[in-house]
Length: 90
Image (cartoon, rainbow, N blue to C red; front, side, top):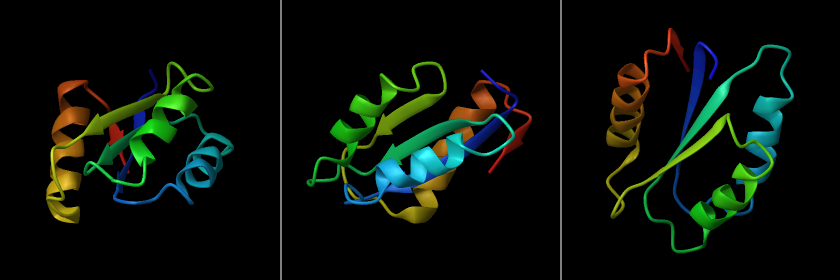
């Protein structure tokens, strides 16, 4: 766990999610990444689960039951981050 978390809300991002996650993990600073997925029917969450094997200690996934919107996804992510004592949330 690092002191910094990047929150990425998703819905139907199967085509982009791997590139986005890889881009964050290629930055010079070390980050953890939280994907907040709104139960994407295209399999975005399954792709993130697959990528967790590549980044086991730094990639996290929260799947919500339905499409609840971008704002509430960020709120969910901020609550998750604060409960884990991250100092910086992006």
